[in-house]
Image 1 (cartoon, rainbow, N blue to C red):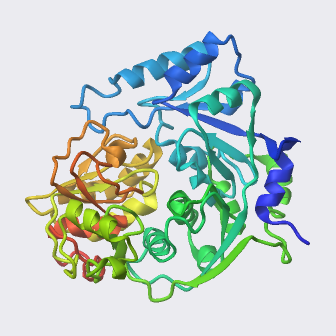
Image 2 (cartoon, rainbow, N blue to C red; image 1 turned 30 degrees about the vertical axis):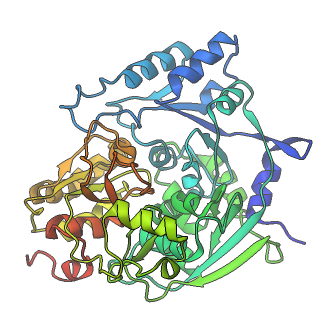
Amino acid sequence: MGATLFDKVWAQHRLAEENGKTLLYIDRAVVDDVRAPQVLKNLERRALAIRRPDLAVVVQDHSVPSFRTHTGLGGSVFVDATREAARRHGLRLLDVGDPEQGISHVVLPALGLVLPGSTYLCVDSHSPTVGGAGAIGLACGSTELEHVLATQAMWVRKPRQMRLALEGTLGEGVYAKDVILHLIGRLGTDIARGVALELAGGLIAALSIEARLTLCNMAVELGARTCIVAPDEKTFAWLATLPHAPRGEVWHNAYELWQRLRSDSDANFDIDLSIDCVNLDPQITWGTSPAQVTSIAGHVPTTAAQAGLDETIWRRAIGYMDVAPGTPLAGTRIDRVFIGSCTNARLEDIEGAARVAMGRKVAPHVKAVVVPGSRAVSRQAQERGLRDILVEAGFLWGEPGCSMCAGGGGETVMAGERIVSTTNRNFEGRQGAGVRTHLASPATAAAAAVMGEICDPRPLMRSLGSA
Protein backbone atom coordinates (compact mmCIF):
# COMPACT_ATOMS: atom_id res chain seq x y z
CA MET A 1 0.00 0.00 0.00
CA GLY A 2 1.29 3.44 -0.92
CA ALA A 3 1.85 6.42 1.35
CA THR A 4 -0.11 9.63 1.57
CA LEU A 5 1.55 13.03 1.33
CA PHE A 6 0.98 13.44 5.05
CA ASP A 7 2.59 10.03 5.73
CA LYS A 8 5.70 11.08 3.83
CA VAL A 9 6.15 14.40 5.63
CA TRP A 10 5.40 12.77 8.98
CA ALA A 11 7.98 10.01 8.39
CA GLN A 12 10.66 12.56 7.50
CA HIS A 13 10.11 14.36 10.82
CA ARG A 14 9.54 11.37 13.13
CA LEU A 15 12.22 11.16 15.84
CA ALA A 16 10.76 8.56 18.21
CA GLU A 17 7.59 6.66 19.14
CA GLU A 18 6.24 6.11 22.64
CA ASN A 19 2.82 5.19 24.06
CA GLY A 20 1.12 5.76 20.72
CA LYS A 21 2.64 9.21 20.24
CA THR A 22 5.33 10.48 17.91
CA LEU A 23 8.12 12.85 18.80
CA LEU A 24 7.91 15.11 15.77
CA TYR A 25 10.68 17.45 14.66
CA ILE A 26 9.49 21.03 14.12
CA ASP A 27 11.14 23.05 11.37
CA ARG A 28 9.72 26.46 12.20
CA ALA A 29 8.24 27.73 15.47
CA VAL A 30 6.34 31.00 15.57
CA VAL A 31 5.70 32.99 18.73
CA ASP A 32 3.06 35.70 18.48
CA ASP A 33 2.81 38.88 20.53
CA VAL A 34 0.02 37.57 22.77
CA ARG A 35 2.08 34.60 23.99
CA ALA A 36 5.69 35.75 23.59
CA PRO A 37 6.09 37.67 26.87
CA GLN A 38 4.84 34.83 29.09
CA VAL A 39 6.26 31.90 27.09
CA LEU A 40 9.75 33.40 26.95
CA LYS A 41 9.57 34.44 30.60
CA ASN A 42 8.67 30.87 31.57
CA LEU A 43 11.71 29.55 29.71
CA GLU A 44 13.89 31.95 31.68
CA ARG A 45 12.27 30.92 34.96
CA ARG A 46 12.99 27.26 34.15
CA ALA A 47 16.54 28.07 32.98
CA LEU A 48 15.83 26.55 29.57
CA ALA A 49 17.67 27.76 26.49
CA ILE A 50 16.03 27.95 23.07
CA ARG A 51 17.58 25.09 21.13
CA ARG A 52 17.39 26.57 17.63
CA PRO A 53 16.84 30.33 17.88
CA ASP A 54 17.52 30.53 14.14
CA LEU A 55 14.33 28.51 13.49
CA ALA A 56 12.07 30.57 15.75
CA VAL A 57 10.34 33.75 14.66
CA VAL A 58 8.50 36.24 16.87
CA VAL A 59 5.71 38.20 15.20
CA GLN A 60 3.74 41.29 16.10
CA ASP A 61 0.22 40.69 14.80
CA HIS A 62 -2.62 40.19 17.29
CA SER A 63 -1.92 43.34 19.33
CA VAL A 64 -0.91 45.78 16.60
CA PRO A 65 -3.18 48.86 16.59
CA SER A 66 -5.03 49.12 13.29
CA PHE A 67 -4.57 52.88 13.10
CA ARG A 68 -1.94 55.25 14.43
CA THR A 69 -4.62 57.08 16.41
CA HIS A 70 -5.09 53.96 18.55
CA THR A 71 -2.53 54.57 21.36
CA GLY A 72 0.16 55.33 18.80
CA LEU A 73 1.56 52.83 16.32
CA GLY A 74 3.04 49.87 18.16
CA GLY A 75 2.22 51.31 21.56
CA SER A 76 0.29 48.48 23.22
CA VAL A 77 1.52 46.64 26.32
CA PHE A 78 1.78 43.33 24.47
CA VAL A 79 3.73 44.88 21.59
CA ASP A 80 6.26 46.48 23.92
CA ALA A 81 6.63 43.34 26.06
CA THR A 82 7.09 41.16 22.99
CA ARG A 83 9.76 43.46 21.64
CA GLU A 84 11.72 43.26 24.89
CA ALA A 85 11.32 39.48 25.25
CA ALA A 86 12.55 38.83 21.70
CA ARG A 87 15.55 41.09 22.33
CA ARG A 88 16.53 39.24 25.51
CA HIS A 89 16.51 35.89 23.70
CA GLY A 90 18.12 37.10 20.48
CA LEU A 91 15.14 35.95 18.39
CA ARG A 92 14.24 37.28 15.00
CA LEU A 93 11.38 39.73 15.47
CA LEU A 94 9.02 40.89 12.74
CA ASP A 95 8.34 44.12 14.60
CA VAL A 96 5.86 46.90 13.97
CA GLY A 97 7.35 48.97 11.16
CA ASP A 98 9.60 46.14 9.94
CA PRO A 99 9.26 45.72 6.15
CA GLU A 100 8.47 42.02 6.70
CA GLN A 101 6.00 42.41 9.59
CA GLY A 102 2.47 41.05 9.40
CA ILE A 103 0.13 38.23 10.45
CA SER A 104 2.11 35.06 11.15
CA HIS A 105 0.20 32.78 8.74
CA VAL A 106 0.41 35.42 6.01
CA VAL A 107 4.04 36.49 6.26
CA LEU A 108 5.86 33.23 7.02
CA PRO A 109 4.76 31.44 3.80
CA ALA A 110 5.09 34.64 1.73
CA LEU A 111 8.67 35.16 2.89
CA GLY A 112 9.69 31.62 1.98
CA LEU A 113 10.24 30.73 5.66
CA VAL A 114 7.76 27.83 5.42
CA LEU A 115 8.65 25.40 2.63
CA PRO A 116 6.94 22.32 1.14
CA GLY A 117 7.37 19.24 3.28
CA SER A 118 8.23 21.23 6.41
CA THR A 119 6.52 21.42 9.80
CA TYR A 120 5.26 24.69 11.27
CA LEU A 121 4.03 25.34 14.78
CA CYS A 122 2.20 28.28 16.37
CA VAL A 123 -0.14 28.86 19.32
CA ASP A 124 -2.98 29.69 16.97
CA SER A 125 -5.74 27.41 15.72
CA HIS A 126 -5.32 28.57 12.13
CA SER A 127 -1.73 27.37 11.84
CA PRO A 128 -2.81 24.84 9.15
CA THR A 129 -3.00 27.81 6.75
CA VAL A 130 0.55 27.00 5.61
CA GLY A 131 -0.72 23.73 4.13
CA GLY A 132 -1.50 25.76 1.03
CA ALA A 133 2.25 25.87 0.46
CA GLY A 134 2.64 22.13 1.01
CA ALA A 135 3.67 22.25 4.69
CA ILE A 136 2.16 20.71 7.82
CA GLY A 137 0.92 23.45 10.13
CA LEU A 138 0.08 22.48 13.70
CA ALA A 139 -1.47 24.47 16.50
CA CYS A 140 -0.34 23.96 20.07
CA GLY A 141 -0.78 25.36 23.56
CA SER A 142 1.59 27.78 25.26
CA THR A 143 3.15 25.04 27.42
CA GLU A 144 3.76 22.89 24.34
CA LEU A 145 5.38 25.85 22.62
CA GLU A 146 7.81 26.18 25.53
CA HIS A 147 8.72 22.52 25.08
CA VAL A 148 9.25 22.99 21.34
CA LEU A 149 11.43 26.05 21.77
CA ALA A 150 13.61 24.11 24.23
CA THR A 151 13.79 20.85 22.23
CA GLN A 152 12.72 21.61 18.61
CA ALA A 153 10.29 18.69 18.84
CA MET A 154 6.78 17.93 20.08
CA TRP A 155 4.98 14.81 21.21
CA VAL A 156 1.84 14.39 19.11
CA ARG A 157 -0.48 11.53 18.22
CA LYS A 158 -0.64 10.87 14.48
CA PRO A 159 -4.14 11.76 13.30
CA ARG A 160 -6.42 9.84 10.99
CA GLN A 161 -6.40 11.05 7.42
CA MET A 162 -9.00 12.38 5.01
CA ARG A 163 -8.86 13.37 1.37
CA LEU A 164 -11.32 15.85 -0.08
CA ALA A 165 -11.18 16.08 -3.87
CA LEU A 166 -12.80 19.23 -5.25
CA GLU A 167 -13.83 19.48 -8.88
CA GLY A 168 -15.40 22.16 -11.05
CA THR A 169 -14.51 25.65 -12.20
CA LEU A 170 -15.28 28.81 -10.27
CA GLY A 171 -17.24 31.50 -12.04
CA GLU A 172 -16.74 35.25 -11.92
CA GLY A 173 -17.06 36.69 -8.44
CA VAL A 174 -16.67 33.31 -6.74
CA TYR A 175 -13.55 32.71 -4.67
CA ALA A 176 -11.82 30.25 -2.37
CA LYS A 177 -13.66 31.78 0.59
CA ASP A 178 -16.96 30.87 -1.06
CA VAL A 179 -15.71 27.31 -1.66
CA ILE A 180 -14.73 26.71 1.95
CA LEU A 181 -17.90 28.28 3.35
CA HIS A 182 -19.93 26.05 1.04
CA LEU A 183 -18.00 22.98 2.20
CA ILE A 184 -18.44 23.80 5.88
CA GLY A 185 -22.14 24.39 5.35
CA ARG A 186 -22.55 21.17 3.40
CA LEU A 187 -20.31 18.86 5.45
CA GLY A 188 -20.57 20.42 8.91
CA THR A 189 -17.98 21.29 11.52
CA ASP A 190 -17.29 17.69 12.61
CA ILE A 191 -16.66 15.89 9.30
CA ALA A 192 -12.88 16.32 9.61
CA ARG A 193 -12.69 16.37 13.41
CA GLY A 194 -9.06 15.82 14.40
CA VAL A 195 -7.91 14.53 11.01
CA ALA A 196 -5.08 15.45 8.70
CA LEU A 197 -6.97 16.68 5.64
CA GLU A 198 -5.53 16.67 2.13
CA LEU A 199 -7.25 18.88 -0.45
CA ALA A 200 -6.97 17.58 -4.00
CA GLY A 201 -8.75 17.56 -7.35
CA GLY A 202 -9.00 19.71 -10.43
CA LEU A 203 -10.37 22.75 -8.64
CA ILE A 204 -7.45 22.80 -6.21
CA ALA A 205 -4.96 22.48 -9.06
CA ALA A 206 -6.52 25.50 -10.77
CA LEU A 207 -6.38 27.73 -7.70
CA SER A 208 -3.58 30.15 -6.87
CA ILE A 209 -1.35 29.52 -3.86
CA GLU A 210 -3.04 32.40 -2.04
CA ALA A 211 -6.42 30.77 -2.60
CA ARG A 212 -5.10 27.43 -1.34
CA LEU A 213 -3.85 29.17 1.80
CA THR A 214 -7.38 30.49 2.38
CA LEU A 215 -8.86 27.00 2.05
CA CYS A 216 -6.35 25.46 4.45
CA ASN A 217 -6.93 28.32 6.88
CA MET A 218 -10.63 27.55 7.23
CA ALA A 219 -10.27 23.77 7.05
CA VAL A 220 -9.97 24.19 10.81
CA GLU A 221 -13.68 25.07 10.79
CA LEU A 222 -14.34 21.63 9.30
CA GLY A 223 -12.66 20.28 12.43
CA ALA A 224 -9.32 19.42 10.81
CA ARG A 225 -6.18 19.10 12.94
CA THR A 226 -4.16 20.16 9.92
CA CYS A 227 -4.65 20.56 6.18
CA ILE A 228 -2.29 20.23 3.24
CA VAL A 229 -2.20 20.60 -0.55
CA ALA A 230 0.41 18.73 -2.58
CA PRO A 231 2.97 21.19 -3.96
CA ASP A 232 3.05 21.42 -7.75
CA GLU A 233 4.75 23.47 -10.45
CA LYS A 234 2.53 26.41 -9.53
CA THR A 235 3.84 26.16 -5.95
CA PHE A 236 7.45 26.01 -7.10
CA ALA A 237 7.07 29.01 -9.43
CA TRP A 238 5.56 30.98 -6.54
CA LEU A 239 8.34 29.93 -4.16
CA ALA A 240 11.02 31.00 -6.62
CA THR A 241 9.90 34.63 -6.22
CA LEU A 242 10.06 34.70 -2.40
CA PRO A 243 12.87 36.56 -0.60
CA HIS A 244 14.02 33.77 1.74
CA ALA A 245 13.42 30.75 -0.49
CA PRO A 246 16.46 28.57 -1.30
CA ARG A 247 18.73 29.60 -4.15
CA GLY A 248 21.28 27.92 -6.42
CA GLU A 249 22.26 24.33 -5.66
CA VAL A 250 20.12 24.29 -2.51
CA TRP A 251 17.07 25.16 -4.61
CA HIS A 252 17.92 22.46 -7.16
CA ASN A 253 18.21 19.77 -4.46
CA ALA A 254 15.06 20.94 -2.69
CA TYR A 255 13.12 21.01 -5.95
CA GLU A 256 13.93 17.35 -6.59
CA LEU A 257 12.63 16.44 -3.15
CA TRP A 258 9.53 18.61 -3.43
CA GLN A 259 8.48 16.94 -6.67
CA ARG A 260 8.02 13.69 -4.77
CA LEU A 261 5.70 15.27 -2.20
CA ARG A 262 2.39 13.81 -3.32
CA SER A 263 0.16 10.94 -2.26
CA ASP A 264 0.80 7.64 -4.02
CA SER A 265 -1.96 6.43 -6.31
CA ASP A 266 -2.66 3.47 -4.01
CA ALA A 267 -2.52 5.46 -0.76
CA ASN A 268 -5.35 4.80 1.68
CA PHE A 269 -7.37 7.48 3.50
CA ASP A 270 -9.69 6.89 6.44
CA ILE A 271 -12.22 9.20 4.76
CA ASP A 272 -12.19 9.85 1.01
CA LEU A 273 -14.73 12.28 -0.49
CA SER A 274 -15.21 14.06 -3.79
CA ILE A 275 -17.36 17.17 -4.24
CA ASP A 276 -18.26 19.04 -7.41
CA CYS A 277 -18.22 22.81 -6.90
CA VAL A 278 -19.52 23.69 -10.36
CA ASN A 279 -22.10 26.50 -10.51
CA LEU A 280 -21.19 27.65 -7.01
CA ASP A 281 -22.52 31.09 -6.04
CA PRO A 282 -20.98 33.56 -3.61
CA GLN A 283 -21.67 32.46 -0.04
CA ILE A 284 -22.51 34.31 3.17
CA THR A 285 -23.29 33.17 6.70
CA TRP A 286 -26.66 33.87 8.29
CA GLY A 287 -25.98 32.55 11.80
CA THR A 288 -23.30 32.19 14.44
CA SER A 289 -21.23 29.37 12.97
CA PRO A 290 -19.36 29.14 9.65
CA ALA A 291 -21.62 26.14 8.95
CA GLN A 292 -24.73 28.34 9.10
CA VAL A 293 -24.27 29.58 5.57
CA THR A 294 -26.23 30.03 2.35
CA SER A 295 -25.72 31.41 -1.14
CA ILE A 296 -25.90 35.15 -1.60
CA ALA A 297 -29.36 34.69 -3.08
CA GLY A 298 -30.42 32.35 -0.30
CA HIS A 299 -32.71 32.73 2.68
CA VAL A 300 -32.48 32.30 6.41
CA PRO A 301 -33.69 28.73 7.06
CA THR A 302 -37.42 28.64 7.73
CA THR A 303 -37.14 25.92 10.38
CA ALA A 304 -34.52 24.26 12.54
CA ALA A 305 -34.99 21.07 10.52
CA GLN A 306 -34.25 22.93 7.30
CA ALA A 307 -31.10 24.31 8.88
CA GLY A 308 -30.11 20.87 10.14
CA LEU A 309 -29.92 22.25 13.68
CA ASP A 310 -31.33 21.56 17.09
CA GLU A 311 -34.33 23.83 17.72
CA THR A 312 -32.63 25.61 20.61
CA ILE A 313 -29.44 26.28 18.62
CA TRP A 314 -31.42 27.52 15.62
CA ARG A 315 -33.53 29.89 17.66
CA ARG A 316 -30.49 31.22 19.51
CA ALA A 317 -28.68 31.87 16.20
CA ILE A 318 -31.51 33.76 14.54
CA GLY A 319 -32.18 35.65 17.76
CA TYR A 320 -28.57 36.75 18.16
CA MET A 321 -28.23 37.71 14.49
CA ASP A 322 -31.67 39.36 14.44
CA VAL A 323 -32.71 37.69 11.20
CA ALA A 324 -36.18 36.38 10.47
CA PRO A 325 -36.79 32.78 9.29
CA GLY A 326 -37.43 32.56 5.56
CA THR A 327 -36.20 36.07 4.73
CA PRO A 328 -33.54 36.69 2.06
CA LEU A 329 -30.13 37.87 3.22
CA ALA A 330 -29.69 40.09 0.18
CA GLY A 331 -30.96 43.54 1.02
CA THR A 332 -30.11 43.29 4.73
CA ARG A 333 -28.76 46.66 5.87
CA ILE A 334 -25.25 46.60 7.34
CA ASP A 335 -23.19 48.96 9.49
CA ARG A 336 -19.62 47.85 8.89
CA VAL A 337 -17.30 45.92 6.60
CA PHE A 338 -13.95 44.42 7.53
CA ILE A 339 -11.55 43.04 4.91
CA GLY A 340 -8.54 41.38 6.52
CA SER A 341 -7.31 38.53 8.80
CA CYS A 342 -5.13 35.50 8.12
CA THR A 343 -7.97 34.18 5.96
CA ASN A 344 -8.36 37.01 3.46
CA ALA A 345 -5.71 39.74 3.72
CA ARG A 346 -3.43 38.81 0.83
CA LEU A 347 -2.90 40.73 -2.38
CA GLU A 348 -5.37 38.59 -4.31
CA ASP A 349 -8.04 39.35 -1.71
CA ILE A 350 -7.44 43.09 -1.92
CA GLU A 351 -7.56 42.89 -5.71
CA GLY A 352 -11.01 41.31 -5.52
CA ALA A 353 -12.27 44.04 -3.21
CA ALA A 354 -10.76 46.82 -5.33
CA ARG A 355 -12.37 45.43 -8.45
CA VAL A 356 -15.78 45.90 -6.86
CA ALA A 357 -15.00 49.29 -5.29
CA MET A 358 -13.43 50.88 -8.36
CA GLY A 359 -15.26 54.09 -9.28
CA ARG A 360 -17.71 53.71 -6.40
CA LYS A 361 -18.18 55.06 -2.88
CA VAL A 362 -18.79 53.34 0.43
CA ALA A 363 -22.40 53.91 1.53
CA PRO A 364 -22.66 56.91 3.90
CA HIS A 365 -23.90 54.84 6.85
CA VAL A 366 -21.16 52.17 6.54
CA LYS A 367 -17.70 52.18 8.09
CA ALA A 368 -15.45 50.02 5.91
CA VAL A 369 -11.93 48.97 6.87
CA VAL A 370 -9.19 47.15 4.94
CA VAL A 371 -6.24 45.78 6.90
CA PRO A 372 -3.56 44.08 4.75
CA GLY A 373 -2.01 40.93 6.13
CA SER A 374 1.55 42.21 5.88
CA ARG A 375 3.64 45.24 5.04
CA ALA A 376 4.64 43.51 1.82
CA VAL A 377 0.98 43.18 0.83
CA SER A 378 0.44 46.83 1.74
CA ARG A 379 3.38 47.90 -0.45
CA GLN A 380 2.22 45.77 -3.37
CA ALA A 381 -1.31 47.11 -3.08
CA GLN A 382 0.08 50.64 -3.18
CA GLU A 383 2.28 49.88 -6.20
CA ARG A 384 -0.66 48.43 -8.13
CA GLY A 385 -2.99 51.28 -7.26
CA LEU A 386 -5.32 49.05 -5.26
CA ARG A 387 -4.90 51.03 -2.06
CA ASP A 388 -5.78 54.27 -3.83
CA ILE A 389 -8.91 52.71 -5.35
CA LEU A 390 -10.15 51.57 -1.96
CA VAL A 391 -9.23 54.74 -0.07
CA GLU A 392 -10.84 56.93 -2.72
CA ALA A 393 -13.96 54.78 -2.39
CA GLY A 394 -14.04 55.57 1.32
CA PHE A 395 -12.39 52.51 2.88
CA LEU A 396 -10.05 53.11 5.82
CA TRP A 397 -6.62 51.53 5.30
CA GLY A 398 -5.14 49.97 8.43
CA GLU A 399 -1.74 48.87 9.69
CA PRO A 400 -0.92 45.19 9.00
CA GLY A 401 -2.10 42.85 11.74
CA CYS A 402 -4.97 40.69 12.94
CA SER A 403 -7.05 43.80 13.68
CA MET A 404 -10.81 43.21 14.00
CA CYS A 405 -10.71 39.43 13.46
CA ALA A 406 -11.33 38.85 17.16
CA GLY A 407 -12.44 42.34 18.04
CA GLY A 408 -8.92 43.77 18.35
CA GLY A 409 -6.75 46.39 16.72
CA GLY A 410 -8.25 49.19 18.80
CA GLU A 411 -11.49 49.16 16.81
CA THR A 412 -14.73 49.15 18.79
CA VAL A 413 -17.89 47.74 17.23
CA MET A 414 -21.08 48.44 19.13
CA ALA A 415 -23.51 45.76 20.24
CA GLY A 416 -26.21 45.27 17.62
CA GLU A 417 -24.08 46.49 14.73
CA ARG A 418 -24.04 44.24 11.67
CA ILE A 419 -20.73 43.61 9.93
CA VAL A 420 -19.77 41.73 6.76
CA SER A 421 -16.33 40.31 7.51
CA THR A 422 -13.73 38.28 5.62
CA THR A 423 -12.56 36.59 8.83
CA ASN A 424 -12.88 32.91 9.66
CA ARG A 425 -15.28 32.88 12.62
CA ASN A 426 -18.63 34.43 13.40
CA PHE A 427 -19.34 33.09 16.88
CA GLU A 428 -21.35 35.15 19.33
CA GLY A 429 -19.20 38.04 20.51
CA ARG A 430 -16.28 37.16 18.22
CA GLN A 431 -15.92 40.75 16.96
CA GLY A 432 -17.35 42.34 20.08
CA ALA A 433 -20.21 41.76 22.50
CA GLY A 434 -23.50 41.64 20.62
CA VAL A 435 -21.85 42.23 17.22
CA ARG A 436 -23.55 40.40 14.33
CA THR A 437 -20.98 39.01 11.91
CA HIS A 438 -21.65 37.71 8.40
CA LEU A 439 -18.68 35.87 6.86
CA ALA A 440 -18.04 36.40 3.14
CA SER A 441 -15.33 36.84 0.52
CA PRO A 442 -13.54 40.18 0.04
CA ALA A 443 -15.51 40.86 -3.13
CA THR A 444 -18.84 40.22 -1.40
CA ALA A 445 -17.75 42.35 1.55
CA ALA A 446 -16.72 45.22 -0.73
CA ALA A 447 -20.05 45.01 -2.55
CA ALA A 448 -21.89 45.27 0.78
CA ALA A 449 -19.80 48.31 1.68
CA VAL A 450 -20.69 50.29 -1.43
CA MET A 451 -24.33 49.22 -1.54
CA GLY A 452 -24.87 49.53 2.22
CA GLU A 453 -26.48 46.10 2.35
CA ILE A 454 -25.72 42.45 1.73
CA CYS A 455 -25.69 41.90 -2.02
CA ASP A 456 -24.28 39.82 -4.87
CA PRO A 457 -20.92 41.24 -6.01
CA ARG A 458 -21.17 39.89 -9.54
CA PRO A 459 -23.38 42.61 -11.07
CA LEU A 460 -20.94 45.24 -9.76
CA MET A 461 -17.99 43.33 -11.19
CA ARG A 462 -19.65 43.17 -14.59
CA SER A 463 -20.11 46.92 -14.70
CA LEU A 464 -16.65 48.07 -13.68
CA GLY A 465 -16.44 51.77 -13.06
CA SER A 466 -19.95 52.42 -14.34
CA ALA A 467 -21.35 53.38 -10.97
